[in-house]
Image 1 (cartoon, one colour):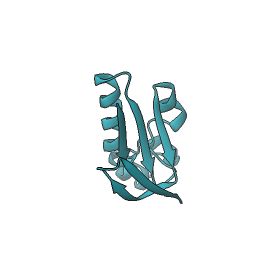
Image 2 (image 1 turned 90 degrees about the vertical axis):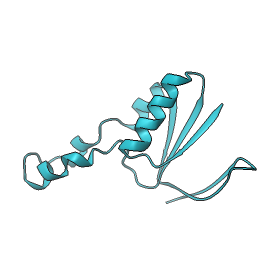
Image 3 (image 1 turned 180 degrees about the horizontal axis):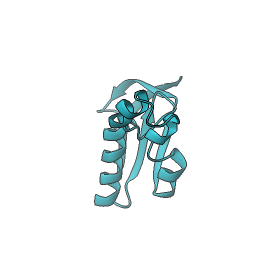
Length: 94
């Protein structure tokens, strides 16, 4: 089974992890237009309020850490078209 997830923020990466737990043999690919994944936006008020200065602390995991779990993450890849019937994803590198 192949699963495509568009968007690698917190919800997308949570969906990818849950799908992998439900079906460990699934081939999961996540497309994210930016270079940041698993971003916890709930940390923004603390970052803006100078509680910490490293914005990277709001990203929980890296693409390499997800790869270790069998989830391929393609950052800086924007999906521009999706054809479910033909099972095709057209994407461009950002």
